Image (tube, rainbow, N blue to C red):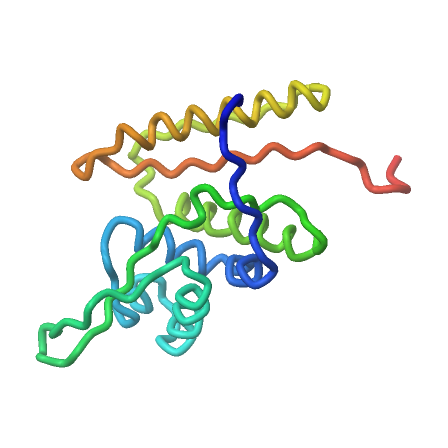
Length: 180
């Protein structure tokens, strides 16, 4: 869109931090409220040490921040973490390391799939899949318009509204060589 600022490109370190589905699940949970390592480990059913390693990686790359320590229910000090929303406008497009970018794409898909499988099946959802034939200009316009639409609705958010998970992925399909 005219006058739109290009999002910064993710560094290789940032891409590595986002190349695991657990990173995306942590970011999603920590978006709405601060969680401690122990709370996240229990919620995501992973070992606390595994979770802490991911949190440290996400903290060092600026995707989460540690909030002020607080006393837990039994009086022990807890360290809560909250997502910074840095991924919202970070360009995750392929740079020099297409393999790493592909790992990030798959991590996002895996995290989204996990959220869908954990969701209450009685909750309404909207799913749509399509194949479009577009030239480069139309592809760019489609992506720009979807980005603008998501930005518009993000600006309407209120804390008392239900969180809606959205995954937008537009990929140009190429058949691998040798397929019939």
